[in-house]
Image (cartoon, rainbow, N blue to C red):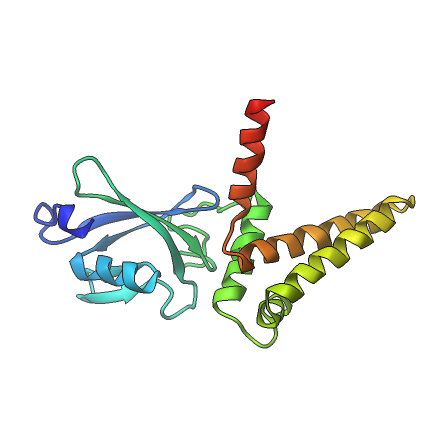
Length: 200
């Protein structure tokens, strides 16, 4: 893709519009030269060329609020990039969710939760229950899904709504962990459901 881009128009820099891959909210605008783009593709974290500092900088290198790369597309003129990424925290240096002072509402909380689970998988720490599940391996994660499914069935036979909903939440969470462990996404499950719906 890099060789197809027209870096000459902007004196070696391309505007890069960053969009949240989960919510579709526009997060920020940065600039990439050829090296920044290659670095982004290599490390899978969005990296820009800072015009003020005249150097490469990976978004989040100071705050830890990285932008985990999902994909990059070029526009029809080959001189602008659309970068889809998962933000690991507020994007703006002011603390705002976006650089346009908009709340990056997680209208799809499942998608947000999935992004957190993926972060725990890719950047584990000793304090995270989710990371500890991944560390135990796929068999343990699958076992937890089975246990939670049984607990949900048991609660379904009773009349305690709160307990039933809590067990449903536990099952959903552990299913998302299992999907992440298998390298799959919730959106892929939805695609299967949508395809079935269209046939019915």
